Every structure is written in C-alpha cells, then in structure tokens.
Amino acid sequence: MDLLQKASQINLEKYQYALPEERIAKFPLTERDHSQLLIYQKGDIQHKNFYNLKSYLPENSSLIFNNTKVIPARIHFQKQSGAKIEIFLLSPLDPTPEVAQAMLVKNKCVWHCMVGNRKRWKIQDQLERFFETDYGKIKVTATYSDYEQNHIQFEWDNDAVPFVEIVELMGSTPLPPYLNRSATEEDKPRYQTVYSKNEGAVAAPTAGLHFTDAILKDIQQSHPIHELTLHVGAGTFQPIKANNVLEHDMHCEQIQIERSTIEFLAQNHNPIVAVGTTSVRSLESAYWFGVQLTNNETNTFHIKKLYPYENGFENLPSRKESFQAILDYMEAENLESLHGDTEIFIFPGYKFQVVNALITNFHQPESTLILLIAAFIGEDWRKVYNEALKNDYRFLSYGDSSILLP
Picture 1: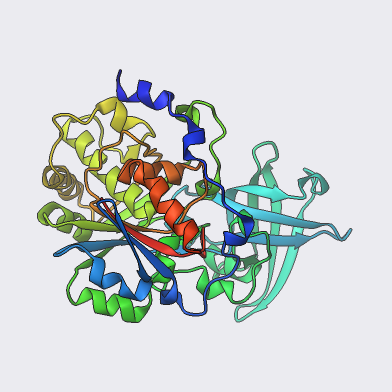
Picture 2 (picture 1 turned 90 degrees about the vertical axis):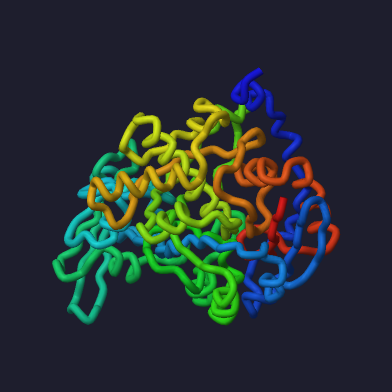
C-alpha cells in the first residue's frame, strides 16, 4: 500500500482530544517569555518556562524564524443606513497577487475577501470612509469587483499613500475566531512577533510570540539565527471536514527566502530548529522545489499539497544537494530572494528532509497542524497533549509553548 493509500485511511477521530473552553488562552501573558515550555525529547517530557529554552536547543543547532508581519486585516465600514460591514482581507488579486508588492500599491487594488454582514451590502453599493492624515484628508471606497467571488476593489484619493498605510488606518488586529472577542489595543503589539518585518500575514506565526529581544540576543551567541517569510493565511484555522483527509482543501501561502538563508541551508549540516509550523512548511517546501529543479521538472516554485507523497521518499537528494540546486537556479536567474508558494500538506507518513526540531504552540484537535505534529513525533503527540492538559498549559495562539526533539 503506497503512502497516499495509507493517508486516505487516516481516521481523523484519532487526532481528536477534549479541549475545554477554559484552557484556550484568550489573552496573552504579561511577559512573553514567562509562558510554560514543554520539552519533549525522544519520548521523555520535562516542564520549564520559555526563558529556559536555550538550555534545550540541540548542540550546534540553528534556528529558522518566520518574520512575516500581521496586517490589521479586519476592515470595517458603516453604511448610511447604520449597517456595519466587515471586510476581512485574504489575498491580493490585482494589480499583483504577490503580497509584498500588493502592500505597496497606490490608488487602487483588488483583494479576495470574506465579508461579514454580506446580506446588507448590495452589489451596487459603494462603501466609504474618510481619514485625516499627515497627507491631508483621504477618502477610501470599497466596491465589489466580483460579487459572487467576494473580490473587493479598494480605491483611495491620494497617490502618495501605499495600501499598507490604508490598512493600518482602517483595520483591526485579525484575532483567531476561537478567541471569541474583539481586538484591543494590547493585541496590536502582542499578536505580533518582536522580529516581524514583512507585512502580509492575516494570522500570527504564534510559536514566535514567546520570544523577546533579550532571548534572541542570548540565543544568537551560540546558535545561528536565520529568517524567511511565509505570509500566514486564514486557511490555517480551517478545520478538516472531509472524511478522507486527502480531500481537505489545503490553503496556499506565499513564501520568500533570501539568498543568504538558502546559502546557509546548502552549506550547514547541523540540526535545524524550526520556530513554528509555518517555518516547517517553508523549509520543507523549499527542499521539494530543489528536488523539482534537480529532476528538471519545473522552475516555478509552487509545491502542490501532495507532491512529496506522489514523488516518494526514496532516492532523494540530500539537503545540501537540494538547496545547492536552488542556489544554481538563483544564480542563473540573477535572484537575490526566492519567491514562491506552497500548499504542502504534512501528515503521518511524511519524512522530514530539513527540520530536526520544532518549537510550537498547542493546536486545535482534528486540524492540519495536529497532523503535522503527529508526522513529526508519531503517536507521542497524544502523550504530549495529555501532559500539557494535565499540567494546566494554556492552548492555541496566545497559549504556552513546546520544543519537540524526536
């Protein structure tokens, strides 16, 4: 039986666990690094605090962080009738689908969105808001570009202002739906990592929320740190509803990796610690792009959700060979950064090619992220979660942390 046949028989109920509502962390701790830290190492479990992390990093290991920055993606308008409309930005469409470029667009753009209170916003209606800014008064309008597909066109009447500033003016922090509360001023800095740089995520890479500048500085003295960007999409919260997990509509997310990080991955043979599942998805996806280049399959960095399993895990290039193939490609194309996207779906049966250790929070039951954890540490995922529940860990985005060392 091949990997995909086995995966089609995955019983999703085996990845269920009881998560009491009171165990979901609704607010962040006062101190980022005072969260609990569960250390899983080859079956053994210890309990510490996050500020103890450095003591448990593998010797000579390097850390890879996702430096995406969350945008205030919940945008609110109010019609003259008083009806409130919420537009949740999902992904840019026009004039560019690339998030980094879309944030810099001026005057007009189109995004795919979710619309709250949609029945009150008719196809012909134009929504308006006005702002007093350093640039003077700005009028922002929203209209349907495609009503059926929820494609929304935004226009503003000042060509000095990029879209990222419009979003900052209008938007609020896109807290996960399971928090069941409105965003506060405190959420603006706290639902953001201290090392966030590149705007475009609509959900935080939450494993990184525990780090402080002081911890980063301390770790960097003995463990090299590198960054990449994966713009986390709202699909990260989408539960698996299909009986056959292979039929789950895996979300696609954009990746950007600088040449220096690719060079490091090609030249370094020491353990790689991924900070968060988004870093895992990025690193493993980049590896498979190197495989595609090695096999002369494509020069487009787009990893389909089941590509690794269809390709198989036998006779693969080494990490060095795969990332060297990417470097050769970048040299030929005169690229300083690698841009692409991934739908990669990591579930039990996957064989990790890059990541040796994982820092991560505690995830929702029956989710794609639980399947990723189960792929990484096997059946011990349940042991880890039972221990966390028994020891009063806080769960999900604002919850506590773990380091997994299989």
